[in-house]
Image (cartoon, rainbow, N blue to C red; front, side, top):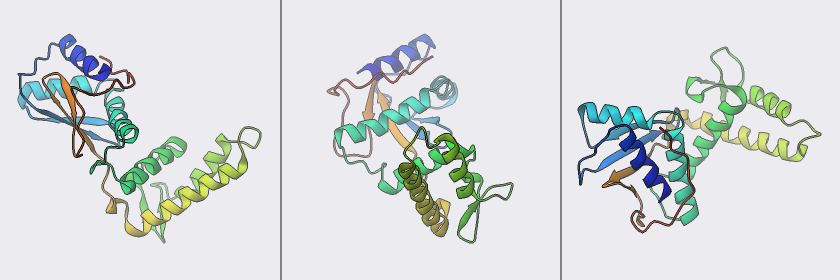
Length: 200
């Protein structure tokens, strides 16, 4: 229950008092790791969002939801294979090229950057430069580039928005996180998970 305690401590440190039995829903956008809060309005909502969006809190909470679903094999309707694929693709593209895939256009079945360059070519060059032969098995490098090429082609053919962004949600009530959109729920009886470093 480390994460529950961290969020509770963060709220107390920031002077946030959530009324008993109020169910907050934290929705996290994977593109910029921003949390939006529903369940309260006005200044309390604004303050909770401000505190949760400081530092790496939103990313830590997003990863918590992903890891929880993976580690405990709880079928979640908000985490799909297509959603995971798009999320990981956008993440690796941004890591190696610096480009946000939402800014791309599609021409002739390929993603093109705002400055009119082929995204796959840029990625391949950047990935090979980051993994030179003396540091990395080149078969592995070539495999990953082929995999990215395949996924980019599929997404270009169907359109970037053909797969919804994998916005993840988790609720908070009476000092505890509660999983959402899945049959098996964890909260009070939740096993101890990794400390994900929610910070003020």
